Image (cartoon, rainbow, N blue to C red; front, side, top):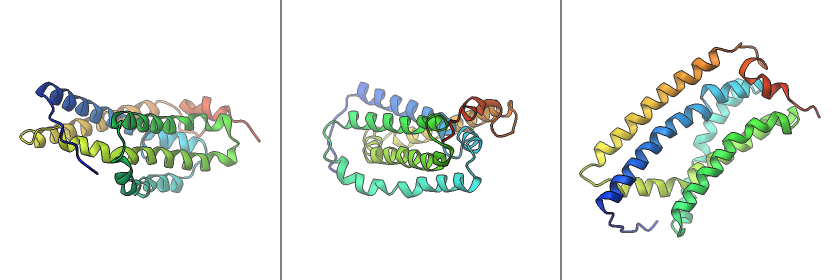
Length: 195
């Protein structure tokens, strides 16, 4: 990938660093809310009848789909409107992550697991498709003198958010009954259409 030499002004650099810091922190909450090994997705999948080994497979599938980056490096280097591409991939990822809510309403029970597999893989695909561009930006925007401090602040903020969000989401889910098809997932799993 060809690296463009953009000389950013101090104001542009500060704005970029702030945006990446906020993005990293919010990504931590998003990962806990809709991540494959988070309490919300796991509870939802179990309510749909997905087995624990399927959730483990979905979690390991993230590493497998990360091979997309090997091919994305050559493809994304030719993209002119990189910001639009990154935002489009993020939007497609979010749609793939939110769409499983409709699975019990739209699909018969026999298609629940394949649909979850497909939508999860699709979401991962879009995440990894944009990663070469994000990695390039993260390596160029922080000035060399502040790079280590920025990376540690971003990692710390993301870690704290993951812990807090995981605890909060888990606490909310624990307020509901533990039986599949009851509690917080009752509306979704109770509205299944039988084929």
